[in-house]
Amino acid sequence: MKPDIVFTGKGHAATQATLEAEFTVHKLFEAKDPAAFLKERAARVRGIASFGHMKVDGKLMDQLPKLEVICNFGVGVDQINLDDAKARRIIVTNTPDVLNECVADTALALILNTVRKFPQSEQHLRAGKWAASGPYPLATSVGGKVLGILGLGRIGEAIAKRAMACGMTIRYHNRNRKNVPYPYDPDPATLARNSDVLMVVTPGGPETQKLVDARVLDAVGPEGYVCNIARGSVIDEPVLLRYLQEKKIAGAGLDVFVDEPNVPPAFHTLDNAVLFPHVGSATQETRKAMGDLQIENLRLHFAGKPVRTRVV
Ligand code: 8YV
Image (cartoon, rainbow, N blue to C red; front, side, top):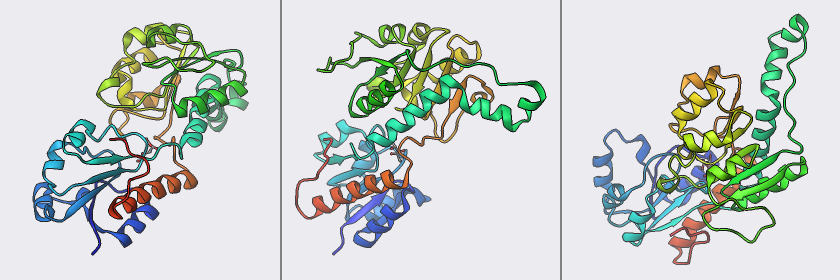
């Protein structure tokens, strides 16, 4: 008997194909009437393979009384209510580490593109402006600048390594000070004030909601840049937009947004923002590695063994 699991979104195709071969899969994200869909399957579903943004909270968990395990595709589990899972003794897993290098590459690209304005300068060429009206205006150097990492975990460390190769120096803020060679700042605003580029790498979720607010953006200042590789929720998005429009900060590089894939159209017209469509981990190799870890966790659990990357 194959265990029954629910998919919460359309995700990495090869991973979903493997899961469909090994499990009896129920695609909640395609259900017209989710409540009826879950009720029909309540007695059988023992697992959730979580993909994308669909909320996995106590309400959903209670509709699946036989639920034992939620295995997420992704390191960030902010769409899953961990307290609700814990209270119901439901195991939650994620896909850490396998994506660190790829996400750090994206973060470095955000820094370089935002500060050096490479996408805007390319646009200048493509629009025929180089020949018609001359070279693209001078940008700002990355070397010699200070990168402030808000949330120095394993991804943050991989970003620090890359930024140092470009001649940047590193500072950081975490809730708890770490045993690392970088100077520590006691709060996000101080970190922003002491940095040229503030890189947001914290987890998402209620604890970091709008952690980067007007006060922190004031500390970034008109010469400073903000990059976000974490979650859109960590920055107060309407305030960020206004600060970019009013040039209260020099620029922003954003891979994540509050209501993905919907990016407020006002961002599209900004010359001082570089916008990526959440491509932090989006390579064939990394997505396969993330899927393999998600599959391994589900296999281990249903073989009666401990999962490999447990969050709660
Ligand atoms: C993925 C991510 O885009 O791992 C995460 O937390 O945000 C990204 O790697 C996402 O998980 C894919 O749905």
